[in-house]
Every structure is written in structure tokens, then in C-alpha cells.
Length: 593
Image 1 (cartoon, rainbow, N blue to C red):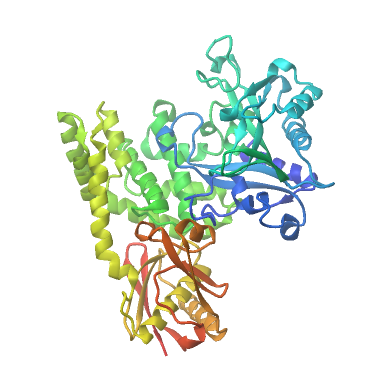
Image 2: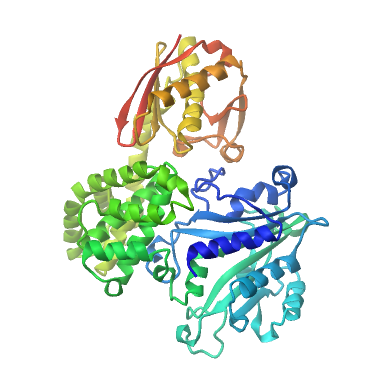
């Protein structure tokens, strides 16, 4: 059964069970305190916390989705059987309870019915783990009793504590609860031969965690106490990659249709065989898939946040590709395979293909110029011993090698980075110098401002939001410069704007000026500002308390000002020029008439 069939079976099953199928949300979450969407529940977090009405917005308490996800904590582990940077999470939810809601029994019943009746998995290979009770929270006896009722023997229902079978909260406080996990026994050939081998065995990979069912019934408060929630929820998640491997009796997803076309292309380009170069082939296949999806969101390679992750993945691929003898341009060849594989499921890949491949080409050309020289210098240092942190920073600054790449090269030679804190110190000084040089760039008009410059500064907020609406959420401010006569606004975008796009941006700005929107200032903590939805792109330069400027319900940004009181003061907005300001950065010059 291929991945397309599995994905469809899952969504069709829950559609039959009166669940609303919700499309995958963006990989860039609305919550800007996290880099990427890492789980299916993120787009429903406000509903799970009872801060938004699920019935009003969806018409039902029962939802299901196949969510695009990116997790970056295990990039160094890529190449084994289980880790992936990009993956798809199958999930279903029951948000709140009434006569139409379901909780533990309903969630377990649906999960077992799907696995056993729709996918025909062998019930004798399934194991269940439940919460054993800890910290004044009782054992999940309800789940235990129901699993026994469904025919699971006691010896295949194991109990674990907070670390394994209690979810959340992800922050210090918030909704949380016990979870039930369904494991699949892959067989003795994957085991460690120990008598006590079972789910959560630390020694082997025989038992695969297949599906996690979270029962949100507690709230952890500021004092660390767990109190019962007024609204209980079910939140489940099952990785498509892992499930596809199991259903095809493969040791990993890399041997399934999710990766085989990419691996076949790498074999074709390199003249080498996957089985003889398994780890590097897996790294290349995983990273190109993740890079395509990240770049499709408009993320550009950079030295900060999401852009840093994309740059790290691309540069890691370029280095490993060179080791496999792959010619220049191989990122484009592999990227095309990924887009072809997913274009019917995620059509945004096809529609953004030119942008994605341009990003890959630019980064490869940029890095290829310094890769060989950087490797030569790094290897020369490592031949003498470990590398000092300050020398690692010099390599980073000179050749663009991410710190993790330098560590990886050192590890391959049995070396390490010594005094890593000296790298961090040098990096901090570098940031301070950059910030000092960028103060005018990001401040736009500085502390002294004329009324005309103040109007133009306010107009940049409208321009910024209009660009995001017309071009996409990948647009982010990269700098501005304002005089009393004109504004200059730099923003991330991979290609020239069309005349139609420019006119649409102008029209949106002028419409908001015509609406005479109030410009309102609020002071709050940086964390509160982010949670409120305020845009913030220069995180390192914000103080603990910030000013947030809202223009009606249209624009909301952290900013030091100054601004006019109402948009009607601005007059008429006109773009006079749009041009390149560097790789992946465009520049708009505009005036107020």
C-alpha cells in the first residue's frame, strides 16, 4: 500500500465518522515564538484551549487532517531508520465534550478500527502503553479497561510514567493530560534478545511507536498543580512515514514510495548504489524533501531563524553531494523529483517551482565558490588537532560554514571543537557590530522625525502588510530608510514584482488610507506582543517591553515609532520604483502625494 493510498484511507475513514477534514496549515505557524509547525494540533491550539469556538468556525467538534511538519532538533540524526526533518502527521481531534463529543473510549475505538479493519494490521503485533499514575494524577484505568474489553491481554498493556505517557504542557502552564500509545512489534529480527524487551525499550528498534492518543483533561497552573479542565479534548497524531514503512514491511520510510524516486535519481546522478552509501543517500533524500517544502513557504536562506535552517540543510547537501561526486546543479534535479512526487497532494509546490529551484541554484552557486577553500582550511586545522572555537568562528565568517557543519567535519576526523564558548563570544560581538550598523537601517528615520517622515514611516506598515497579502507570508522587512520626501523599503522575496502585483499593493495601501483607520499604540512584554500576533523580525534588538502599533485590524507590528494618529493623514500612496537589493531581497521606493 503506497503513501497516497494510506493518506486517503485515513482521511476517508474519519470523513465517514463525521469528522471535518481540515487542510494542512502552513509550515510557518501563526505563533511566531516557534520556527515551524511541528504537529497537527498547532493550528487548533486556540480551540483546544477554549479561546476560540470550534463549533462557530468548523461546525463540529470532530476534526481530522494530514499536516505538513518540520522538526529541526534531530538534523544530526538523519540517516537512521526513524528521523526526518520534514514529515506528515495524520491526526484526529474531539474538541470539548457534549452529547456529540467523544473522549477516551471513542478515540481508542476509532484508532483500533482504522488500524485493524481498514489497514488489516495483525492485532497480535499491537501493544498498548498507558499512564501508570504519578504526581497525584491517577492511573488511566479507563483506557486500561477499554483495551482489555477490546481483547488485549494484560501482558500487552504496559504502564509508564510522566516521561513516556503524559503529554505537555509545552509551556510552563497549560492544558495537558495522560496519553495512550499504540506500538507495533516489527519482529525478533529488530530486537535486542532481552527478556524484558518491549515498547520503549532503550536498546533496540523492535517496537515502533505508531499512534499517540492524548487525553487533555488537566491544566497545569503556575504553582505546578494539576487541576481538572472544564473542557476535555482528544488530540491524536500518527506519522505517515512510519506507518507507510510498517505497512510495506520495510525497515524505514526510505525504502518506500515517499523516498525511492529521490534515491533512484541520486543513484542515476552519482553512478553509485544506495545500499553501499545508505546514510549519505538518506541525508540527501531527507534534506531535499524538507528544503523543497520550506522554500515553498517563501523562506530564503539566511543566517537567522527559518532561513538558517534552510541554509544549513542546503549547504549540508552540497557538501555531501560533492562527496558522492554529484555535479553542479544536482539540487535542482532532486528538487524537481520532490515536486513531481507531491504536486497532486500539495499543488503549492508546483505553483512555486520556479521560485524554489531559483533559491536552490542561488545558494549552490554562492556556497560552491567557497566550499573547497573552506574545507581545505578546516582540514588543515584538524590535521593538527581539535579546532578552537575562535577558529571555528573565523571559518563560519569567512566561508559560511554553519557551526554544525564544522562540528560534523571535525567528528568525521575524530576531532571536536574546543572552547566552544569562544565561538559564541565572537558571534555575539559580530551581532553587536551588525546591530550598531543596522540601527539606521531598521529604525528607518531615527529619533528625530518631521511630520512628513512620520507619515511615510506609518505608510511602511501598510506597505509591509499589503506585500504579505499580495505575495505571501514569507515577506518580511529586511530594512528601511525614510526621508521627508520618500520611503525605501527592503523585503524578502525571490523575484521581481509584476506590474499587476505592484498595482494591487498600491490599491490595498490606498484603500486602507481611505478607510481612515486608527493607529493605536500599546505597550506590553515582547512575549505578549508575539502572542497577540504582532509582527517582529529583528528579535535580537527588542527590549523586554515593546511598543505595538495596530492600524485597525489590518496591520500589527512591534515598532519604536513615530506614527500618525489616523491613516487619512497620509494622502495618496504611490510606488515609484521596484528593484533588487541583493540575493532574495527586493526594494520598493515610494512617495505620498
